[in-house]
Image (cartoon, rainbow, N blue to C red; front, top):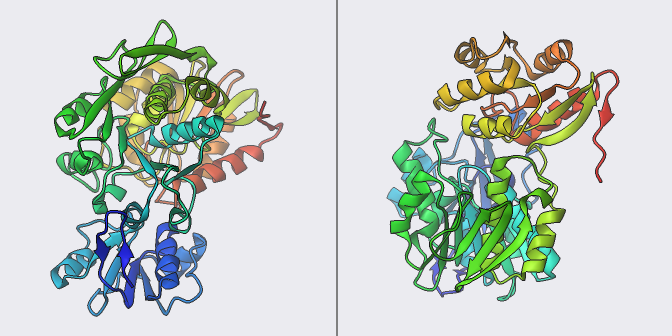
Length: 464
């Protein structure tokens, strides 16, 4: 079996493939490889109980499943890895020593994709920006696919993509570990300290740089002119450069905010696309996302009326400042996506009401001084929970009138229900991952929503 890329390069023939991870990407890889004639074994470092709790079952046809460890790749023709497996993992290093090709779901999809590639990455905002560009593509009536970290399995869709299809991908730093092709339009929302429990700052920035590394002279990079680290990526641009800003016009092509309007300029022609007050998503960070989405969509050739219509219709993604409902005369908001202090700060800035902040989970060795300052300005109470509850509790001392520590999210919600006052916002924006208690941030957000729905007098949010 040869896996062809549109440019003609190929992965060597694969008879026996080893897949690391039974997560969404691992299962996607296993199914694709089996469909193309490979005998597949799957190995996952999680226990059988952990996999069962996560609903991670091996696809039919897998020859062998090994749990509790990542199997040595000796004797295999290919190692296929989920993005959760770091490139420094001993199994990955061993495969490279043996000359066994290593590929990821996204790396394979980029090889196979014949469509117009649009890739969006960044420390925050990439999912929302990607989904908003998807809404704009829908409004334009073009053929498009949204994928990457959004939209579920990618490989079962990518081979059906036609050359004119817009393939809009949300791409994480861990996915960029294993890519050797850059999108034709590559956008970086921002680059701020994150995941420093896994990578050095230099390595983390270098992974973001990978989004641009393989572009050619005819390709386009879109950077955030307001973000210090993103500005340093200008020197990496191999093709054309466009930029976005909330501070006023950019030097060349791109999009910006001026007098409350989002303005787009391409080939010297400027046009006001829509007003900032027409957006349904709250917060300055979501305004940044909208400006980037306008730039990406315009670069992809979407008409201004469709760009505006898509932006106006976009209600946001689950677990991102998602209003769960009302209870105890307060609004309860699920922002479980906030796995770093930077995201929690953005959430706090998006609120005007007094906040009871639920903070905790597993921390990432990131600085907390700026978060403490934001909490001191916005929070009436902070409730810390989970594995990092004590660390967050110590960091937040004096930042609010009430700072309390509990063990679990269940206890945090129960305590918030006791402390809340009419007109408050209870905000789950944890600043840490959920891996101490949940398989993913979505599961943590779903648990929060269920707990809130069980409170006396709960009223669900009604969509309009």
